[in-house]
Amino acid sequence: MAQDADCLFCKIAAGTIPSTKVYEDDTVYAFKDINPVSEVHVLVIPKDHYPNAAAVAKADPTLIAHIIEVAQKIADEQSDGAFHLLFNTGEAAGQTVFHCHAHVLGGKADAAKVAAALA
Image (cartoon, rainbow, N blue to C red):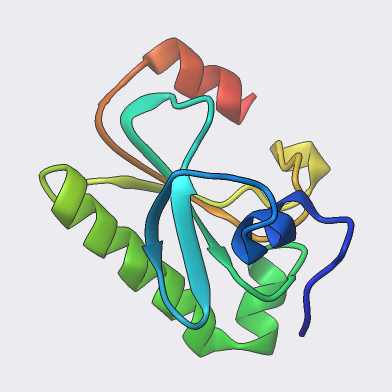
């Protein structure tokens, strides 16, 4: 897959929109969420454009596994290793940016903000 010129997260992965980078390799980019709901709130995205996690899993199962491995690495480095991993897939599930992204939530969470994010 390639990037989508109109996609916010493709632009972030390409460096044309600024972000606070946490991790990067050849296939994924991770950055701090601009509206965190916990002490650690990082988004892990594939650099190529996939609309959601199910599309990544179908097209490239090793990439979805790598996203989860990166999430663990971030939790180990920025928290105590424990974390919530959240993929919103589809508008009805709360997905607002249609580029696969994993929310890595670690540390103390704001329960009201987490509940609102899941509503």
